[in-house]
Image 1 (spheres, one colour):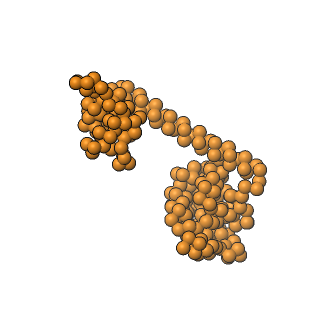
Image 2 (tube, rainbow, N blue to C red):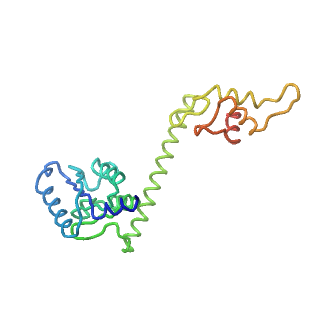
Image 3 (tube, rainbow, N blue to C red):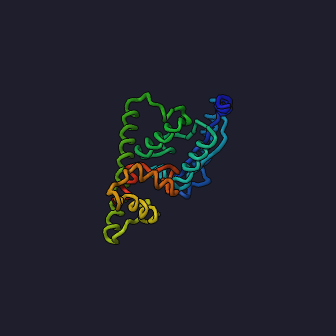
Length: 230
C-alpha cells in the first residue's frame, strides 16, 4: 500500500505564490508567477494539485509567520506531495536566512522546491548553500533555545514574586495535592519498627492506590523522590 501511494503522488506538485504589496494582489504579479509555474509544470510533467498564496507578505518575513506557507505545510504533511514550484527564489523568500530556514523545513519533510527556471532550491550540491543551511539551522536552534530560556526566566521571576509556581506545566503540588500527601505519608518511618519504604516500594504502593504518572505507569524512583522532597 505504501509503495502504491508513493507512485500515485509521482509528478504531483504544489504552487507557491507571494506578493509583497497589497496593491499587487490579483494583479500582474499573481498572473506572472502563476503562468511561469504552470509553464514549468507542463514542460516537466508535474500536475499541479494545489496553489498557496501569501498576499501582501514581505519576502523578509519569517516563513513560519506566513498563513499561506503554513497551510501548504499542512497539505504536504497530509497528502504526500513532495514538490513545490515557485516562480523564482525571491518568491520563496528574499531574506537569505528566511530562505534557507524554509529550505530546511522542506528538506526535513523530503520536499523539493523548484523554480520556474529549473533551479532546485533544496539541492545540497552547492557547498555555499550547504554552509548557509548549516548556519541557518544553527541560528534557528539558538533562537529556539534563547526563547525557551527567556520564558523560563520569566516564569521563575513570577514564581519568586508570587511565592508559587506559575505558567508552564503545573507541578504535582498544584495539580494533585492528594498524591503528594500520600507519597509523603508512605515515605515516613514506621512508628513500630522505624523502617522506611524504598522509593520503588512507595511507587508500587501509590500505584495500588490508583496514583500513576501521566503515561498511566507506576512512578519512577526519581519521580517519587521529587514528590517526597518537593
